[in-house]
Amino acid sequence: MNSFWMKPDLSWRMWTVWQRDRDVYWKTFKVNFLPPLLEPILYLFALGFGLGAFVKEIQGIPYVQYIAPALVAISMMYNAFFECTYSSFVRMYYQKTFDAIIATPVSLDDVVMGEILWGATKALINATIVLAVVMAFRLVTLPHALLIIPFSFLAGLLFSAIAMFFTAVVPSIDSFNYPFYLFITPMFLFSGTFFPMDVLPPILQKFAWATLPLTHVVSVTRALAMGTWPAQGWASLLWMGGVTVLMTYLSLALMRRRLIV
Image 1: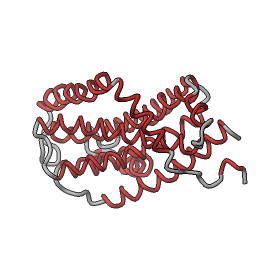
Image 2: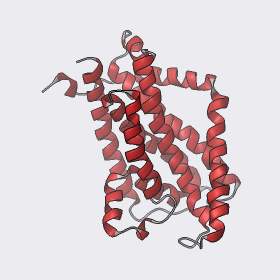
Image 3: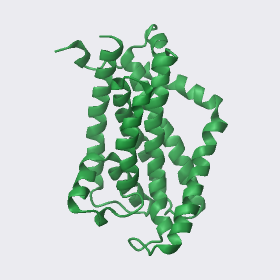
Image 4: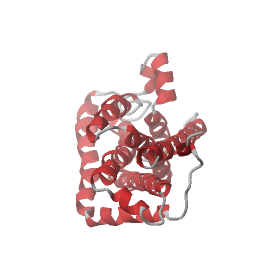
C-alpha cells in the first residue's frame, strides 16, 4: 500500500492551525460579518416576502417561513466549502502557508485537519448570524431552533471535508469552477431549499437523498427550526457522519500525495 494511504497522524497541534486561521479571520471581522448579515435579508425580502406573496402555503406554513431554515443551511454549505477550497488553496499554493507550518513540529495531517475544523467553525459562525436574522423576523420556533447552532458545526465538517478533497486534487484554482457549478449549484437548487422534494420525480428524490449532502442538512435544519424532528433525521445524521469520515480520510491521503509523497 502506498504510504499516503496510511493511518492519519493527528495530534492536538491541529488546533494551532485552527487558531492561526481564527486570528486572521478576526483581523478582518467587519468585512466577514456584513455579507452573512445582509444576504439573508435580501433573500427574505426578494423570495420570501416578494415571490412568497404569489405562493400558497407550503406544508402548512407561509413560504417565507419555509425558505428561512434553508437559508441557514445554505450558509453552512457555502462558507465551509468556500473556506476549504479557494481560501485553503491560496494558503497552500500561493502563500505557501502549509509549507511554512509543516517545517515546524506540526504534521501535514494536522494542517489539513485544522483547515477542516476552521471551515466547520466558519459554517457555525455564519449560520449563527443568519439564524439571528431569521429569528428577528420570527420565522423559527424557539428554543428548538437553537439546536441548529451545534448542528451547523457538524454540517460544516461535512462540507469542509468534501471541499478539502477537491483542494487536494484540482490542478489549479480555476478548476474549482467545476465543483461549484456541477456540485454546489445543483445542491443549492434541488435539495429541498426553495420547494419540497416531493414535487420532483421519485428517481430524482432518491438521487438527491443519496448524493447531495445539502438535502440532509436542509431536512434537519428545517425540522429543528419548526420545533420538530424529521422522520429520517437519524438516518441523515448517520449519512452525514459516514461521508464526513470518508471524505476526511481521502482528503488527508490525497493531500499527502500532493505535497509529500
